[in-house]
Image (cartoon, rainbow, N blue to C red; front, side, top):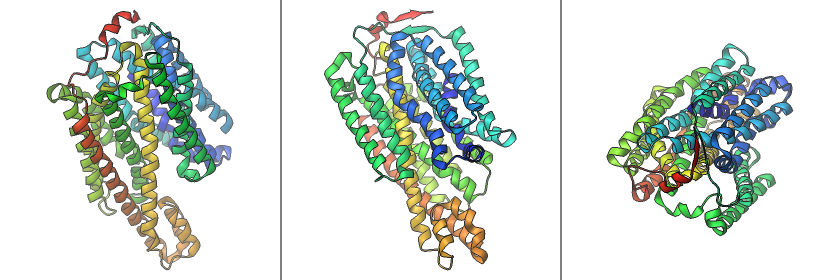
Length: 501
């Protein structure tokens, strides 16, 4: 399950390192390249809940096998794509199949592992889900540097082949015995709501938040979300997702924690890579290597979190994790500097990695533990949708804070710089570094000014993250899950689950 999950997660971020290569080879615009990257996440997020529920009904093993086959095929097509249009089509197919795979991986774990081992298994899954993106980017950057950008698709194909072989051999089938008709309306409306909201978060920073398409997408997403809640309340026990369960501490606390933690993590990645590349002057591969300490700490503590939760409780474990994440953000905000380089942020990265690992596992277990065995595909999908929403929200918010902070900081420091060069430098630190040679004798001053302005913007984004984590800390400390041993709800339903081994 972890290998299958890694294939899906690595494909989310892997193509980021090949944007320039795709644009040059196909003569594609930046908008087209961004669609190649974003359409995968958009389709994946929109279909998680419907396909997770279908997997519960039709059987998790057949759903997983079908998803892996389609995903592997789509990756092969993408690797040989002769045009941007073919690539977009392949990415859409990959997104659909990823939505078949991702919720099933966690559902298989929660529905088959015995209760005393379930927390450890979820910890492993959570570690891969949290750090998989960074590991995927590292391997992708390595392949781009030593070979060709099309080799990026070798990694998911290899992972799919291995996961498929192990699934056929080792994974038992499990499925729901449905007592109600499938909630087709709820599934459709949920897909529209998620697609609309994710779209505006992806496109808003690029198009502008007041752009008509952004406003229409936001309106459609919000309206569909309201209709979804109303319809699910009407369906009650026959609903796709019983929204009444959000009154419980486990589901609400786990979902909010994952939303915020993954949002901050994604936002930090947006901030870190320009720092490594434009401020420190590192390559894409070296920049990805620099992220590895945080990923390693996240994976290690995700595995330790269940033991800690068993001793001090899930709520206390989540509280400690969130506090350490906030501390990591504060350390980076306090000590980051151009001259201090990598060492000025390393302590903060390590604290964040530990904190996220400790908070993610009990949060995931709180979500899956709030729904019955028969609904584990839906529970897993909800967990995944929450992560995708958090990721998109964190990138949009922290990215915007960084960009605005950078512009405010550099505006007062461009005296003596030619107007055209200054206007370009205001767009971002990468633009400033690229246009610096045109500034003549002011070239080095412009680069240094842009670097210092980026650090100023960085600090504003980090302090905003600290404030958000502080609010989350207070919420979880007061309203977090009570139980230290989060069991799957309605264990009696296990007898109604059809298990074929």
